[in-house]
Image (cartoon, rainbow, N blue to C red; front, side):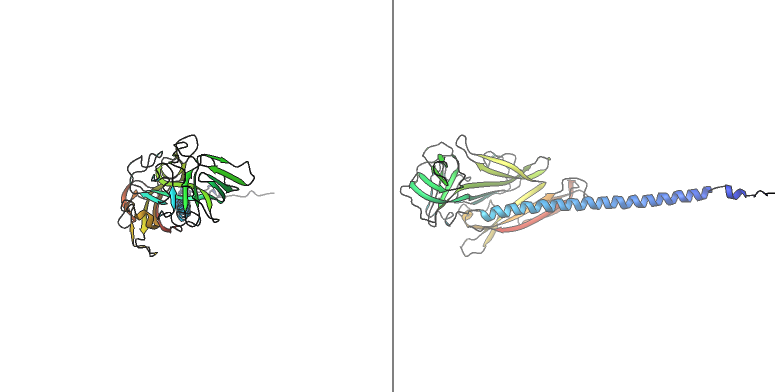
Amino acid sequence: MRIPTIQSRKQHSGFSIIEILISAALGVFLTAGALSIYLSNKESYRVQQAMSDTLKNSRFVIDRLEKKINAAGYSGFYTSFTSGLGLENVLNSPTNILWDISKPVYGYNNVSSSDIIAGVTGFKGNSDVLILKSMVNENPLLSQASSSTFTIGAGAGYTAGDILIVTDSAKAAIFQINSEDNTTVPGETTVTLGAGATPQPGNATLLTNPILFDNTATAGKLETLIYFLKTGANGNTALFEGRLTTSEDAAPVTSTVELVANVEDMHFIYGIDTDDDESIDKYVDANTVTASEWKQVNTIGISLLLASENDNITLTNNSYSFDATNFTYTKNSSGSDKRLRQIFTTYVALKNL
């Protein structure tokens, strides 16, 4: 006969209320710890991502400016743009800063006006503007039929309205093309210029006849670039690049494109060699550079303040002010937001001046 097993009440009672409370407390504690670690890691990731983004943007800006500053004043074998020796500029308004090649570098300090450059508006107040000019799309000069007709090598890519520069080791000419022909003879482009106001800015006269170039002569288009800050597509301040654009049908314009967002401030300082001994004698801002000293600039200092795209990255509000005397930014304890901000400073030598 089978005897039933007797089980105690304790075996059927389950967890006590104390055990449940302890387990719940431990669960809450572990969940809170895990959540704290998660939030900490997420915050750390956001900070690291913001730092990485601003660093990446700063590298792009500096690389772009370095490349264009290094190229400023390039003119083949001709090395006298700044002295003006052997230079013939027949453009109307030859001293207009947008095509005055004798000033390959020019700047504005702490701009407050929106009309310093034709066609460019909305400059960020109290930031700087930099203008750079050089010769691009270089091709050999094959022949010169007259003071108004030149034949240039293949691949020129010139069109009517382009401002052209022709140089050899001793002289240079700058003028606007009235017409071009790249179809009559394969591998050659023939360009002509005429006097008048069309296309704009137009040529005041033809070149002096004869102005003959030697067998080292090359031709190239004038490239004028303007770097400045204004409000970008995301509502924050951004770096823009303006480009002088000419054509046979319309007046010259400065077409602009946004290069990098969240460039909050930008300043330049100019190193001037006043005695031509290949060393810097002084660093000054654009307002202090005299008219003759623009031709003696051989180094440009760049100071940038970049900010993160997103707010609430730093623990406290912050902002920076620029100290022009020391060419540095100073962090302030107050500001309108908690965006991450980083400062980048470099100096770039001009290779062609």
